[in-house]
Image (cartoon, rainbow, N blue to C red; front, side, top):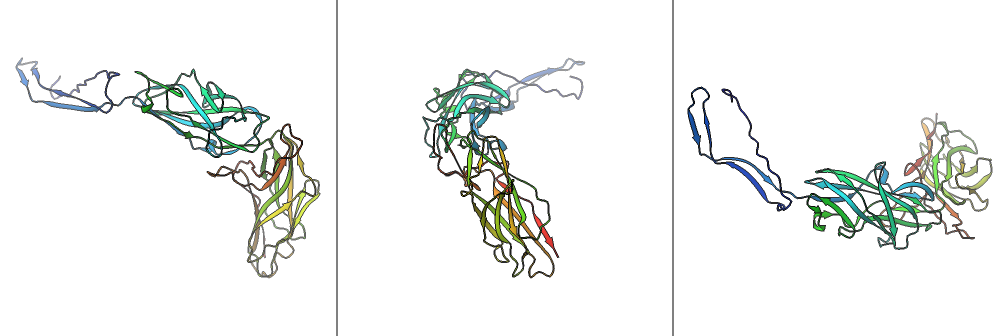
Length: 393
């Protein structure tokens, strides 16, 4: 070394597969000697110089469920496309790990194993858009084996279980997948020293998303009406469409729209709500009023008198009108606003499935009678909000 120069000495070693987890190792320089380049004078030092203390950690894995936009619970119907039915994260601790096999168990809405589940067709495991391997469903267990999926040390990777959905499914059923267990029979994760022991894997009963399965799947969307509140006996106040994304024709039973008003003065009212189809046919009437004290109202339309049927893949549009002729009564200045909303994407709330804004029925595959009334709907958002209409003085 040149005069006044510094150099770093690094001690390296291979960590054996037999190393004890949690043990520590350290290095100490007991003595060292040196001599001058120009003078050739030699010196020795026997003072201990302590180095780094290293704690030994063996490979281990943690599997947890993923919570993101793709894992929100929703309604699924018949499809030949692979759709997501579960998503998990695998974290590798201390060393690279390789997923060789994983088993998922189907559960129902009581959290019990569903050994007779009939909703799923072909199943496969993915990392993003990359297929890792096909999976086999037997008595509610989905086994994904023959995998070769590497998770880098001290990092994580996501795995997604995808499936086609059967046409003749268990209508009205609710299912989720869980990681069955961390036993060697159900889960194989390979480390440098061989398969991880169950004690080195945290994974049992890790639940992913709950899904509801229906053969008719209504999807609700709002339709714009602009911003102006007209004053008439039948002013358009809310508009929405319903698309049947299922495999069976559905008929509407009831439709509920929540209407909200602000700015109404004493004596001012908005009421006589009517539901119309796109052909101008009157489907239902209800007459409760919004007033200065009743500013929010759930307007329920019974549409059983005139049957409204929506075939698979079809979309129908509906308009709500109201008598707004007295909306400005009692006002000398200011603004009256009116807006409507519906429940869009119904979801699992931990114990039951949420109630939607459309009640409907359909004939399941192989049946000649309608199923019991359903209210599970699907949409891009939990709440579908209509146009905010206003009028000012």
